[in-house]
Image 1 (cartoon, rainbow, N blue to C red):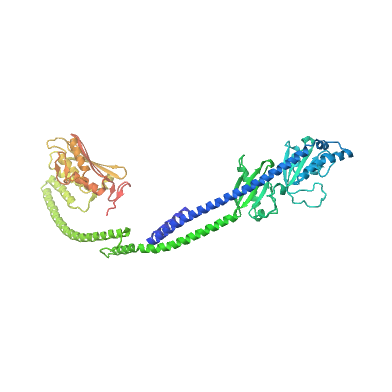
Image 2 (image 1 turned 90 degrees about the horizontal axis):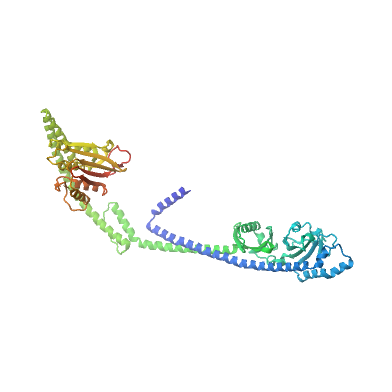
Length: 640
């Protein structure tokens, strides 16, 4: 996937770079305007969306708190009724009595029993106030006092009988007829909340139940008012949802009820001990919702508010798309205007481009007249100067061709003269061999090799083995002059014989040693050693060392300073030798300058010496093979 993406980007960039400057400028203009516009629009509408969600959260959290306050008030009313009902000792005694005769029963009914009825009458929101006893000898007094057999199958009965807690709050989806007067009738959908409390203690087997319908207990949740954008829900301690079934909001979206339960469970797992109002955003089938939850601690329940965000978010999205469409239309209009303005601005640039194409085709022009300043005018100015320079170079080239032809004729003449000298030396050599003068014959052979090497100048570079052969010939010729011959020692690996060196770069160094290393009265054995070593992977050093008289420190410093400033100092050509005199011919300075000219300023010569011991010239140049050989690290010859 990444490779395809990289290939696509590369193809697009290739295509884009081949477009005209005018097209690229317009494209860049579109990108510069469109991308920030989209980013700013998205950021702006995201802020609007966040603000709307925040406002919806604050508003519905406020409504939720009002509903919670209503529920707390009703809890206090139910609790007050329960306390008044269980505060009468006559009621407690009646529940555990062995039975009352008719007068006693009539007196009880007119006394404490009517007081309990008055408690329910004074609070019309209480649906039922009932006391249950496990004493089978107690007479039931409807609709207040009943035996426990009537509630034995309630899901909370066993839990309450075995619990040491004083009370239990229970939610139910309906309010069944405890008297079972209409056994065949279906239970009416009347959700309620009940407070279950021990009358005195668990051993008395007396339970108090105070019921209140949820439409009175939570008036906003069960008000029956149709709202298409939100709905309140009560969740008990077991996670069961209680809601007004007359509202259609929760049934409008498939799976909304199940998702509300799942989101509430997730909030419960993430909530801290002191968490009060919690909220979460979620979606069902692409529709967005906001869930707000607040706990009612005494009930061990929570009140939820499920709010639909679809309406407002849809309007925000519509406004976002409209503004983006307007921005795109405006950018297109501005791009068209920019295209024509760029066409006018770049007219002179196209004229300049056409002139350059003519020059490339060989239609030499004298320049182009473009009025005005700016970058295009500056380019035209430099183009005109370039054309004048080209015309001058063409004229110089024609003149050089004439001079070159003349030089070729002179070179041909020199070659004719050199052939005459070669033939003459061969004739003398043959005479020496006929006369048995082998020494003279060998000297003439070496001299002829030197002359051929000097006269045959077909290029600046030669193989190291050719330069060494030339040095051997030079030493052989020079040994004719000395009683004690000079010993040439070579320490050169075979694979380095194919390396390239500048022609006549080693011979002047050896010549300098032969002329200046040993005084005329010296009886020392004369030796010149040439060592070739590799330095790193792409660098070669050649050391030419003699065992002569060496140099004084100030002479050595002077000579190295001359070599160091060879490219900048206005000094005469030649080599300043060990006595300060200038050596004739091509000297160390010229060799150093040639190496730096052809290889670079990081290469060249360096001299080291010990007075009375030796003098050593180090040559440093890159490892380059002219043909074959080598160990695989060498550079290839790529000169043209």
